[in-house]
Structures are given as C-alpha cells and as structure tokens.
Length: 241
Image (spheres, rainbow, N blue to C red):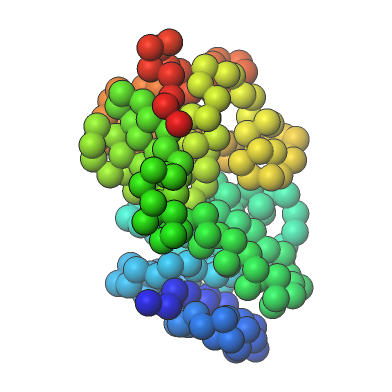
C-alpha cells in the first residue's frame, strides 16, 4: 500500500507544489488548508506522515500537533517561514519530529519525508530474516529496531519517531549519563543553547507511555538531577543484541 501523506498549508500554491512532487514518488496525498480541518482529518484517518505548516488559520500548527499528540503518534514534519530557534523549540515541544524552514526545495521535503518514514517503518527484507534482527532486550523491555517496535512486559508501546529515537539512543548505552545538550545534538541533530524543555517534554511523554504498561520499564529512564538522563539497568540485565 502506498504511504498516505496529509499536506497542511493555507497557501494553495504550496499545497499543489508538494502534492506534485510527492505524487511523483507514489505517495497518496490528502490536503487541509487550516488547522481545524487538519486536526479533524488527522484524527479520523491514520496517515503515515503529516506535513504541517506552523502559521495556519483557525488553529495554528503548534496547537494542532499538541492536540494530536494526546491521541496519536503520527510522524509530523513542521513547515514554517519562521526560522528562529524559539519557533523550532515550540515545534519540537508540541511533538514535531522534524522541521523545515521556508522557502524550501520540494525535493528536500520529499527526501525528509522518505527519511522519516524509513525511521518509522521496518524493512520487510530484514523482518523476513529473524536471525538478522537488530534487537535490544532487557527483562521488562524489548526494542526491535528492524521493525521499529517497542514492547514493555510483552505489550506493544506506540511511540512517535522522536520518542523512539530518544529511547533507543539511551538504551544502547545503559547507565551512561547524558546531559540535555548532548541529547539535543544526538537525537534532534540540533545544537541549541538556552531553553532545553524539548528534551524534558519528550522524556516525560516517553515515561508516561511506558508506565501505562510497565512501571519497571518506565523506571529505567532515570533523571540525574542537575545533569540530564540515563537508561539505568542492573549488571545482570545488560542488553542482548
């Protein structure tokens, strides 16, 4: 089945341009011209990715993403004419997984969509070869990196792309403490000096989702006060990869 993309922008020209380039790559495209329409469509249908403009009538992109994140984990790429760091931080805090500043090249958007989908969808070739799977296993948590799937105490946990990337980054180096600046650079590929709420917000969401099915799995993500975070495991529970 082709991937379905929701393109949200109040400018007809931009929506048509993105539709043209994305349909060339065999994506199926749905459009929305304001925030309320975008939110309604995103709730009613499971899109593979949403291209979401920040400045929208009726409801802005930050509000759409924040409200959507309360119910769904759909990958979101934020589009905006504002390139200031504060807008980027707001976008990431609201749950966006990537960020593209206007004016942009449509080809760049297509490449970013493909890259995001690769991170969220497992390779069928890899999935057909169980012996070759990229697994990180703990007593209460299993991360299947080929299928992009997380299970806590045998129950599946649905994560956004950034929540997943944050979890696997921490889990690959158990008991190592990372400060917030390191996590922004390694997980978001973004150096930002100042407001570090982006990391805290994602850690909080990640813990909440894990805690719904396993308190033990959630407790592995530890806050190191005054420093940052670590993925804590006992020596006997080191990952089997």
